[in-house]
Length: 290
Image 1 (tube, one colour):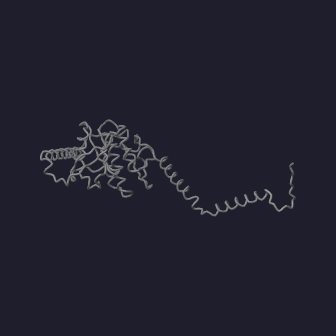
Image 2 (image 1 turned 90 degrees about the vertical axis):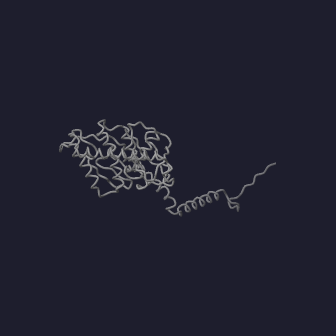
Image 3 (image 1 turned 60 degrees about the vertical axis):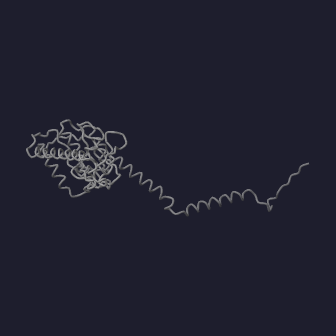
């Protein structure tokens, strides 16, 4: 036989309302603990991530792919000889900005100017190679071409007039002067001298060269998606001679030639790799033209 027990309101046993009160106390203490955390701990990571994302987004939005710069001169009539002089004077008189950035920009423009000299226009390969050099040097192109200017990785601005970038469509073409022809003849003579030096060295054999002066060079060809090739060079070999060795090792057609780039800039052909900052084991870029 069952029975019921009723508890009077004045009973000493606690009711369930005490549980809800305890819950409020715990919740309140948790909120106070969270509020007591340092502001830097709760926001430093998110702020740094947000800042890095904003910087990356701003650079990606600002940077544009390189395109041909087509324009017509209305203020004056340019001749090819005048444009050549203007470009030489322009790069010889740069005083602001980083010298290595100007060297890179000049190398890129030389690639684009080559299309005019060949009479075939600027090929897609030349644009792609120029774009690779700009990307490697972290040069930002905000206007799809190098004019009116570009930015380096530190945000410095490098203004470049459009007549430095490319010829106007209404340029007056003049025959080459004797001075320019002499310069080209001297360059051809230099190439022949380098070839002759290479041939004589090969005829004499490697035993006359101190092995300590020889080094293995790895070069990545721009037109081939393969691992870098390896060639054996002398430390005092000129860049022109090294480029020819790379061309022979990679079996390039005679109509094509190589320019060597390192650390985002085209190396001078008359100097050796080491005099221009190259370090052993570093890979160079072999840019293929022609």
